[in-house]
Image 1: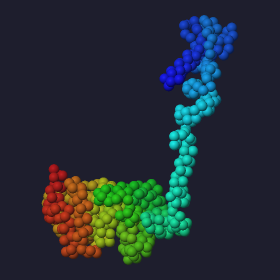
Image 2 (image 1 turned 45 degrees about the vertical axis):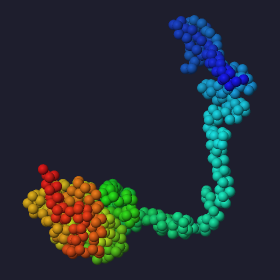
Image 3 (image 1 turned 60 degrees about the horizontal axis):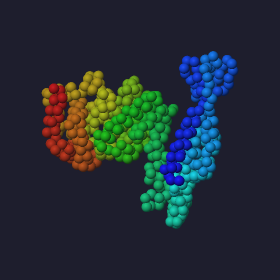
Image 4 (image 1 turned 180 degrees about the vertical axis):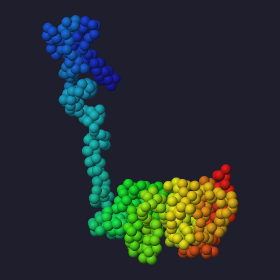
Length: 515
């Protein structure tokens, strides 16, 4: 028999099944409608018929006549009996219809008959969830097993041996079993490899990330200062510790993380911690000043800062370090929580810029203080702290000075100073110490950074990269000629202009913004 005749026979058989399936009982009603299904029972009063929508009860008086037939399920059984012993196509058609009629047992019986006649019948195998493997249908589990066995045979043929779910050379297996691990082409002990991966061993003997170990150290010190538990909120680059509240620690950590990411974008540094240590910046805020002072003692005793630094730190409202690791601490006191967060924003600016720029070499105060103030302004919309002043390491703005920076209005008094030429020229302000910088100087530096952001965003990074290259070395005072020369060269490299010309460009830009 040709393929065309076999196909035609299957179509005719399928059509015959469809016609036969329609031969069910039909009840004709007086209203002209009719119901098809299977008569379940009849009495002189009621006729019950099972339809596709369930059993319907009809009043005998409404029935005109009943035409007897067979149900789809009965027809399925009749058609199955009529199948030839070798008819695969007919069985596949019935198998599909059994599925539509939800005849699970009949469908399973037909599957077995089909596969007995055609062991690789694709439709039945796919319905069972089987897949092809080397031209044959098998279960997914069998496919995985066969592929695994083939791979194992291939590896063994290459002289490799199994080890911890993979295959290695016999020599490598001996190394692994002796406690060695491989990094690139070099074998080393596991402890050395973990240190290379940035892990450290905790007190319980487990290996943890170095930055997570630092979390435990700082938290333990903070809790020792207040003699109770502190809240800890960690983000990718910042960790906030506080005895104030969990919500406060979370808000502080979110604000610091925002500042970190802004800096990383502006200075085009990797968003990870590698350039930073690698370690998160720690922000520790206490509720009371005595707890803050005890923590300053701990920093002095456990870093390169020393006891003398701790004594000075205890006399001010907050301190920061960027070596040995980046850390800042302050207290809330009667200033309020928002003020404490603003203080941390200011200190974060110092930490970020110093960590990026010079590590241990310092930064001219004009650029350092202005960047810290701008960081606080960026993150809070105002400036609560003015970190310089005659003979003082750090202080809160006095009431008589508050208007200059409060509510983000520092640009207006700076503009007035530019109009009257009462601002200090750039070539003088870069020479000033922290204690001689004025608020006008800091505002001028903030405006310079904003000017670069608005006109040439890469300028800030270019300036500090050039400053690093030209720096005379060490931590010289800004009055040293080498510092001034480094600043002049950085302006020339980054802006292609002398410092004095940049000063005039800045003045023109600020005045234009006022118009």
